[in-house]
Length: 332
Image 1 (cartoon, rainbow, N blue to C red):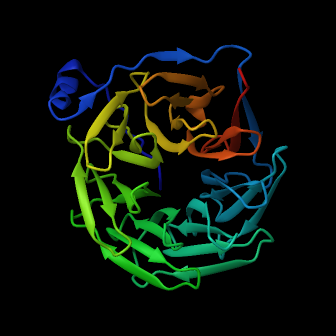
Image 2: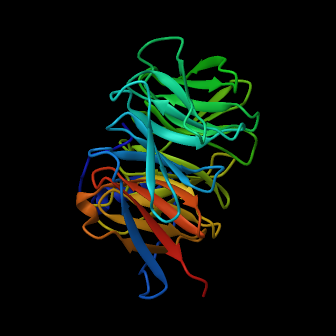
């Protein structure tokens, strides 16, 4: 499940331990100005306890999201109207979702050990992994027009073609818990190792490289391509981290001593946005300036997944709030 529940106080001594290995950038946190950005929330009315997790923009202009707690795939129109479609059972555990090369939505079923595909009309196909216990979690579209996914329990990276052919590649670090995955600007796929404390890179030919994050229990979570390389959240560091395509790391501390950054995306403004599970949505520039957008009672709702969507907005899921939210940035 793409949630890191650990909350810990980070001291100056711990921060100093990272400083020799990471380039650290001072971050200025700016609260959202009244009247320029708005947070709107839309409840998932179709299913109680849906636990919305991953979210993506669909080819039909709607938002599509994984209902981890209900074994369903949801669709939300720009006006907040929700419909949803069942997978093969309520306990399949859909986690992440992405638009495929065939205008269908592809998603991971963590509990069932399958990759799912659903058309915008609701037609479902499921592809079991070759080996049981893989725990597929993250998924992305690769430059080779295949879908690439992580296997958190199986410690593998998987590739599935549009016709359902699956190839798997082992992650060198044992018990690394590969988590999120994203296509990079260098033609490779980059992924986070939640338990391994590393960032991984895999070519479309299956060659894996790993880059450790200093500081021990960094818990890297979401990952996305952004300005200057790949950006990821590290809840153990309370930071966003950028890794360029040569492996050089830059740490951007995020506001809030209790912060638990998780999901991350590239917004319609070209900047990097992240979800803080303690109840904020944040935006960070390439130089480290952060703007935060509080979610009402957000600490009880657990903002988690993020995606760009209609209305030049960033949309997010609320795992415990049973809702999908929107942050719209107005011009000027």
